[in-house]
Image 1 (cartoon, rainbow, N blue to C red):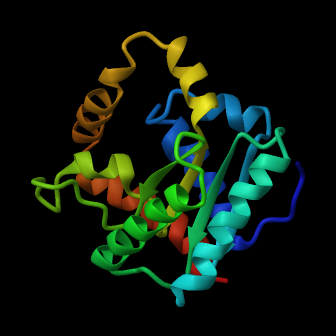
Image 2 (cartoon, rainbow, N blue to C red):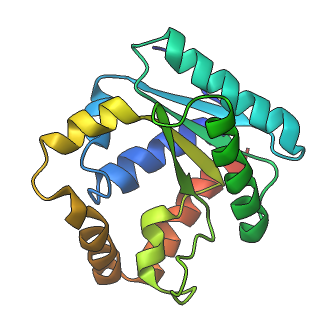
Length: 187
């Protein structure tokens, strides 16, 4: 699926390669990158309605294009505030249900300031869901179930990831994301 990527999407692809895959945050990401089945799209989230329409358009695209396994929607500009992002995420999840996509697609959430409920903001474990920009990861449920069925102890993935991030430490993780963002901010 060769497409020209916006600078933010190119940096997001680099984040998947150099962070998600390199630190094995998602044990299935490498395969999808190698198979070129990940779609990267940048959507303005300054106004929610068009951004939500773009999400449903991506669901339709996945319905019509089995060769695309997953879509990463980079939401910029907009949603820089983490609480605003969480509000948007709740609306997006409800919209998927309303549009009949419950059980078909799942949203994974990523944000530069991601913080798990009850965690300190500087806990390195938050970096399992931190990304250069706010984004939604639209996953096919069937593909996810297939991948998980061949993976030993999938329930341990989140805990393993948090421990790996804590071993790397906040300073290194902040630096890694900053380098990826800077590659776009300089343009």
